[in-house]
Length: 219
Image 1 (cartoon, rainbow, N blue to C red):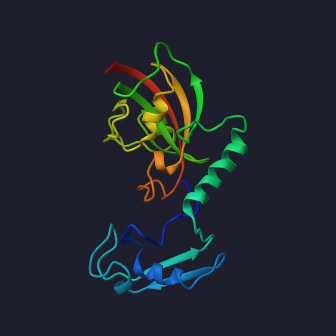
Image 2 (cartoon, rainbow, N blue to C red):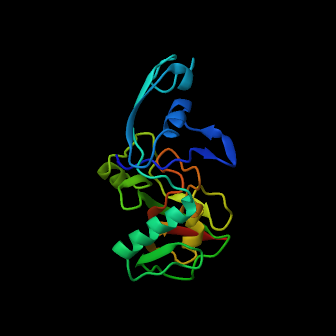
């Protein structure tokens, strides 16, 4: 488990119906940066008459919250996070034109991957500066306590440049690689899980991926 502050838009202008629990939202509006508070939220401001996960219907909720920072411009904030990480961990590398960072581990052989190529990749995705949260490799899953008996742990097939993968950064990175190549890539959220994130990644969060092209079928 990666313990870090949760970065979450209070209300997104493009998705006004996707928002926090109402009681949390109302409580945050009464806080300032650096303050801590306990919210005791009645069911009417929580999940109401519906159950949620292990919570039964009509549950009162208790949240202990510290408001670390109010971010007015999440894109600018994310850029600063990435720049600080790069300057600390990889000070000699520069961003690629597509606005991501590429660190080659193994060059590979043959021609560079192109749009339309079908490739198979093994990869491990990490929180930026944190542990892995997803992998196609069983040994890595066991190492990071991510193992699931229902996962196949097989390379993922990707058609480069088609926009059919959940992480668009695969395509932009693959075109800097050759078959058999391996690299570590640092992706801003626009090349990863975007402005709403997913169950493992907060909105506007950069991620780091170790990516290996294990097979290619060409076009």
